[in-house]
Image 1 (cartoon, rainbow, N blue to C red):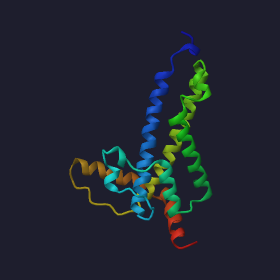
Image 2: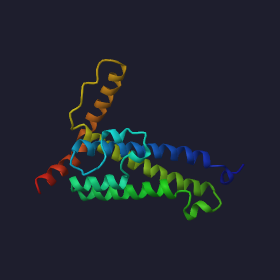
Image 3: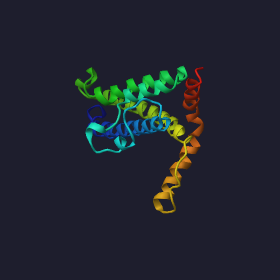
Image 4: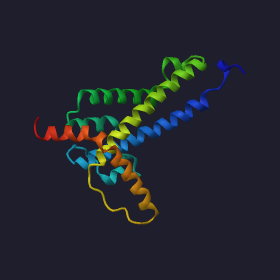
Length: 181
């Protein structure tokens, strides 16, 4: 079978699934950061965050973005990057298989274009994952205990602490907004 006739769907779908998970982690970290800030105007609470009720699944990425804008004026580079992330996320999640290129004969080239978009989204997820985990590192946390779960939680705390400097851009923006600067 020639490379241009190969079935690329499994690889595209596998990577897309990973990107969807990455996006969900970013949304959870962002939501958690906003809950810690307690000034975001979100009408969701911690219980909603973990609810099985589909009506309480928490805010959309757009709602999270607006809530973040209410508490902080992000530096223009971060704000622009976040706007582009939201657009890219929406394109990949909602339109990757309905765009004009999706209704053409699928070749190595069209598969590569999809994979490149997914890879770009995954990279942006990594950036925002680190940013919001870094924000969470600034907040007090409970003692996780000494059991096996506690050991894993301490490892997550250590990762968050290592990313703390990345979260300072948002913490600084929140403090500036509070001080009216």
